[in-house]
Each structure stands twice: as structure tokens, then as C-alpha cells.
Image 1 (cartoon, rainbow, N blue to C red):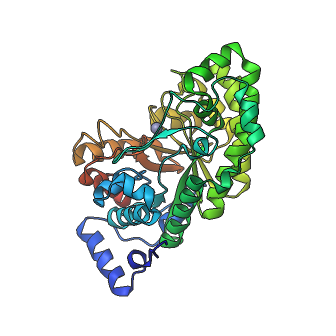
Image 2 (tube, protein in one colour):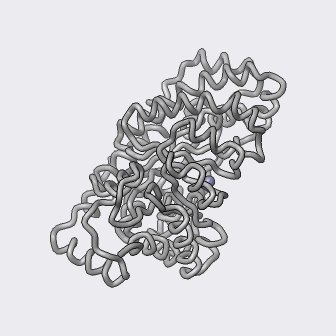
Image 3 (cartoon, rainbow, N blue to C red):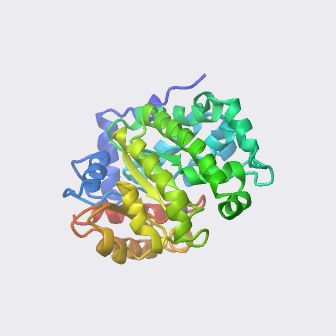
Length: 374
Ligand SMILES: [Zn+2]
């Protein structure tokens, strides 16, 4: 039985007034546009009254709300409460669904490890495809991922979040990149060695994964997500060459992005790691937003800043987790100064915020965006 989240989302006039007063005391400017509108305008390079800010709080929110990860994995409303409380309290412009991102892999037979108070992880010792011939078995099983309990769970969170924030904020959700899902099913060592020894099999595997990645993204959109984030931490410069990327990753990413964008949502790509020699290929794949990790935003803005909205990139470990609010402010101002000329910029950390990010550091990040230009 799912409890209604209305007790923490519906605010009468008085609550709204006290919320506004609270924001004033925290040094945040009053404003007239919703976070969702600001994000949409930034993505379209239109003028905004301030810089939008989208910290990804799907891990630290539970810590702030005093909830354990495992409890939220058992009850979607526990998670929605934590994320909405976090959104109301810090005042950023979007809410984010819960991890595990591995849901599609799990629905197709990959095994996860679960922990009491941390994000579930893939069990690499037991890949679903131990040998190439196992792919045929998975295809034959023809599993409907849409009815898998973890996919239903994530979609329920998305729809509860949408109900909770309405049009005030964007509802963000992680979708899968095709190469990442292939790695999840085959295991990373297997996939990297297949790239050299069995390139044709890698293509067969990705043809199968592409359809599942599209199905999953469209389910999230149907549930209410309007800001889809695709990540790929296994195809950066430390993992594969540009040539391999171009042949094996680029075509599938393009097809996935086309399908997601046809659904009319904002599509962000998060290239985890160093991608300096292949940003041109990423731009060609057509994301609306590049949520960047380890890159000089000034350089990126100069080179591609008129083609894609840039999101980032305050360091999430040395600054957000280990720094002071002043460090966060300095780095956030630097990002905005370098990245926001002529629009098309969203402030964020350079990756998902770690669980133990101090609350005052998150508030400092949000305050910089909310007060920039006031
Ligand atoms: Zn990352």
C-alpha cells in the first residue's frame, strides 16, 4: 500500500509565505520563474533571471532525512519524502529518482549486491552473459523489462516526484547508455576483450541492448520524467580508444538519443571521466545538455558552448565533500563565469553528490546560483 505524499507537498498560502521568509533569511533572492522554466530556458539559450542549479542529491538526500538506503529501496515513498524534503529545504531546480541505475541489467539477468546504507552495486563475478552464446538464450527468454519489479519501483518514484513538485521543478531520471548495459550483462573484462577478439558479437549484443535502453527511457518519460540523464562511465579515454568509441559506441548512442529526444524531453549526457579527445563525437550524438566531469569549462564553452548547454562542474569530492562553503562558492562562481556567457549553462557538481556531503556545502552551491546576477 503506497501512502500519499500529499502531506509534505501541498502547502497553503501561509506555508508558502514562511517558506519565502525562510529563503530570505538564508540569503536567497526572491524570484518569479519556476526552476523547470529556468532549466528549459537555459537549455534553449534564452535569457534567465538567474542561473539554474541541479545538484544530483539522490544519495545524500536520505542521509539528510535520517533514512537508511535499504528502507528507501523497500518503500518508494520513503525515498520520495527524502528527495522532496531536500528540494524544499535547499531550493534547487530539480528532483531526481533513486538509484540503482542497474535496473535494466537486473531485469535481464545481471545480479546486484545490496548494502544496508549504500548504493547497490553490480556483482561482476557473475555476468549474465558468460560466453557469447548466452546472448541467444537471453534473447530467447524475451523478458518484458517493463513489468520487472525494479523498473516498476523506479517509475513509481518518478510519478510520485512529478505529483509532488508539479511544474515547479524538472523531474530527472537516469537512463542507460547502450554500451553500459552491454558491459553490465557481459562483464567489463569480457566486453573489453570482445572489442578486440569478437567485434561482430559486440555489435549483436548492442543491437539487443539498444531496444531495451529505449524501452526503459520511454517508461521513465511516461511516468513523468522530463529530464533524462544518460551516463557512460566505461567509454572514456582511460577505457577505450577514440577509434573504438567511434565504431562501437557512437552509432548506438546516436540512435538512443534520437529515440529519447523524439519523446520531447530534455536529454542530458554525463560523460564520467576524461573525454577530451571525443567531445566532438558527443556533440554529434545530439544531447541537449552535457553534464561534464573532469574538463575545463572555459575550454569547453569556447569550443562547443554555442551547440550544447553545459552543466557542471564543481568537484564533488575535493570541494563538495571535503571543502568548506567558501571553497564551494569560489569554485561555483568560477564555473558560472567561464560557462554562462551567452546562456546555455546549468550549475552542478561534476558528478552525483556523495552520501556525506555537508549540508552547508550543498546550500552554498545553491545560493551561488540563486543569487548570481541578483
Ligand atoms: Zn560521474
